[in-house]
Length: 353
Ligand SMILES: NC(=O)c1ccc[n+]([C@@H]2O[C@H](COP(=O)([O-])OP(=O)(O)OC[C@H]3O[C@@H](n4cnc5c(N)ncnc54)[C@H](O)[C@@H]3O)[C@@H](O)[C@H]2O)c1
Ligand SMILES: [Zn+2]
Image 1 (cartoon, rainbow, N blue to C red):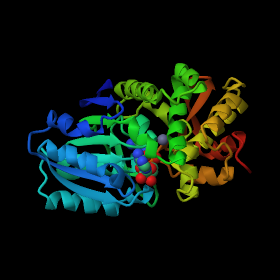
Image 2 (cartoon, rainbow, N blue to C red):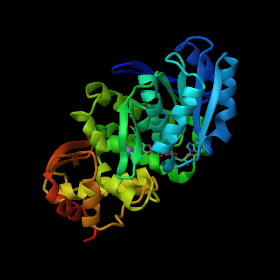
Image 3 (cartoon, rainbow, N blue to C red):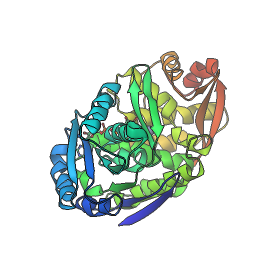
Image 4 (spheres, helix red, strand yellow):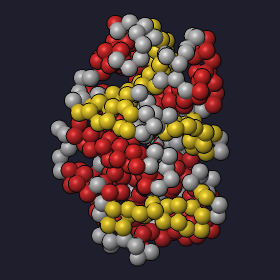
């Protein structure tokens, strides 16, 4: 088992280890008062696989367990479901000593986290990420949110969990496509500032998933500790995300998050080369690793469409937009451009005209 301690507005541990899932009752007992109530939030793919183990472990530890099972998929991260969850928490008489447990991917983590952040102005929140993407990215750092019709993650809060439990054994049931999704975020850590991780990823990682996850969590920990509320270095985590979010939205979520981010990262790398800001060997290096891990590299949307959707994004500041550009293998920087120059930027990155 690997334990990584995150020191932000709240200090908490991320524990990583195969077979940890059924230790959740004992672990939570050390964090909230005995006999508290727990609201287990999950989705209808994950709950049938792991719900019984988690509920059983929580009940065995003396907790009263309520459940909310959302339909799997991004659509569950909306105001309608959030309201339902708030009302259920109130009906169940939840207080500030009770706890919300998220068992699922990033969708469940973001939704349950935002419910916990806002109900009674904040109640404890425990994360059990079950997708690779949630383990290495969304469960660490305290960002919670729901989507609005106008854009992804437009309504949310910073709310740190009381602990994060990652059991890589659950990845055996994660569909291939979602595994690739998580790999995109893992590669992202490599390209924003972790050349050692890129070297590991160039080898065989089949038997070292726990180590890869731990390296990513430690990297994200370093970033969020330095910049909890994303005013500086944390922005680097947005590599590939400006185009990525636009691609997700344009595809009406048929192209999943990580795949969209992969396309966005390569676009940023190619544009950075065109702007003479980046080592020329980088796009081929990146494309090689993206392809190897089953990710898309071709942008299916026109530059102008991408720019239009990207400008709805929250990262816009006045008439400028902050982009993340790779400059060398394992290094990226923030780069501001005028909103009006965004279409040209995406053209430079290879998006169709
Ligand atoms: N809060 C943050 O900092 C942050 C960071 C990155 C992404 N996100 C958000 O995360 C979401 C994407 O996360 P995701 O890719 O985990 O999506 P997801 O939660 O939809 O999970 C992907 C799919 O895998 C299934 N699944 C999850 N774990 C499984 C398992 N062990 N076995 C079988 N099936 C399993 C889910 O039911 C779902 O169908 C997006 O909404 C994105 O905005 C948030
Ligand atoms: Zn992401």
